[in-house]
Image 1: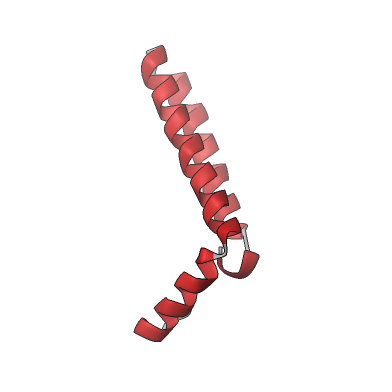
Image 2: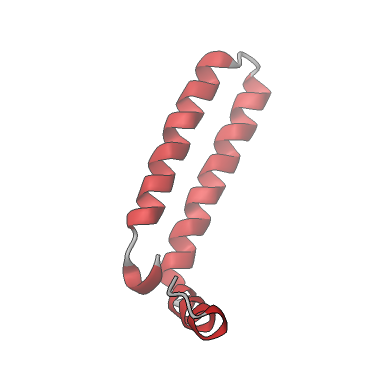
Length: 71
């Protein structure tokens, strides 16, 4: 996510999508299915928004200064 690298976000989104598809095959309650799918989409949208906001590079710089570890 740092510096426009969306690989981690794409991997997480793919995993969430597969998990959501598995969930709707196992759980037959439509309300629970919709709630889980909505939360999954919200997480994916937040990841995209975070990556595009420019805040991710600022957070990475702060983490590097505080902990000495590049994020």
